[in-house]
Image 1 (cartoon, one colour):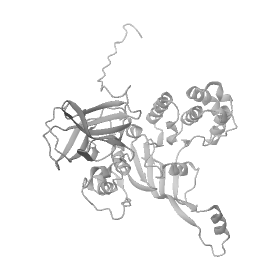
Image 2 (image 1 turned 60 degrees about the vertical axis):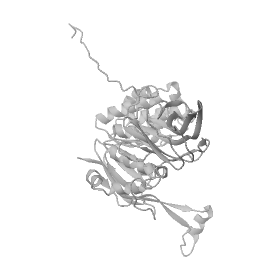
Image 3 (image 1 turned 30 degrees about the horizontal axis):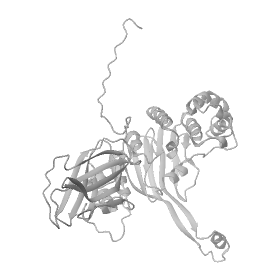
Image 4 (image 1 turned 120 degrees about the horizontal axis):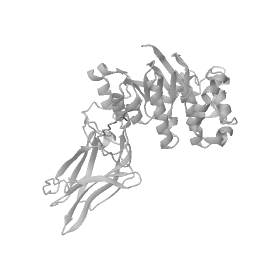
Length: 445
């Protein structure tokens, strides 16, 4: 296949000074003493994007995702390395890039079109389509400094996506604007993707990565980690988010990953981290646990460990919609209890209970316990909640003389992120099976 973008050994170094005066001292020092520290925003990064591919770049904040997009588009120059681009680029980077705030919307459209190599006549032909897509009315005749952030991104995206680019580069700009405009943008992206346009995108929306990307490049702290299919890279990304760097390195160097994707040997494994088994020690040490949770109870039981497992058995706070997952909790008892009940509840960010269950509802046979006993309880189910952020609570309770007793309850102990490439209306998916049969009108041409 023909290569549209080639990134070869690109490094970007910034000089960091403790004090502003240090920059002047360094420039004037007779023996060229250095007063700065080198910060590697990117380190020897290499990857290619083939013509017609949709490629995603993912990684945590500070991984260098936006930096490499700016280098590809020419906004920044690399310290070392080369970038080759074959094709006309239309880029939607951070809000406001390429716009003159004192110009009107119309003037910015023509100015940006000229910068992309289009004549005024060519832009005249595209103007109506751009304005229809942006749908900001008469504001297009006002200076863009008067726009709201929503109007600004509507115009910027309408311009970027309606100039028939050979290569479309999109940063997180789609996170701005209402849900209806975002849906409109993604429909248009799908149209141009099917028409053969090369798309390079950076986003934290793993649902979009899974839905649109033919290939994904994973970065971590400026370093290339791996590239491969969207599902595989999202799986590795989840390990980085959960700080499971030992498991990440283990997977990167397994025969499976070497066969299915390109990997790097520079995984940032902390010094002194033992190559222990996958779930040695406490589960919660590999989870993102809420340090400010609310907890209470009479102390006769203690939920001392908890974890979330995805469909592949990985400990993670990120789950894919539709996959089977397990909530596991470990409870230690400090006093005899005749009939303990183990529970979990999932709430939205507003605190609304969405779902949950307990061992009493499920009819689980729980034996009486004495001091020093422990229980490990697993709840396994399929994730049907919509993509989004949720909170998990759990407790150990019971009934004594007809009264409800709380032995230990942990509110909002874990966050739970659901990644989805198909959200329906409401809180959860009814998993409808759709059948639509069309009957053509008779006698119509």
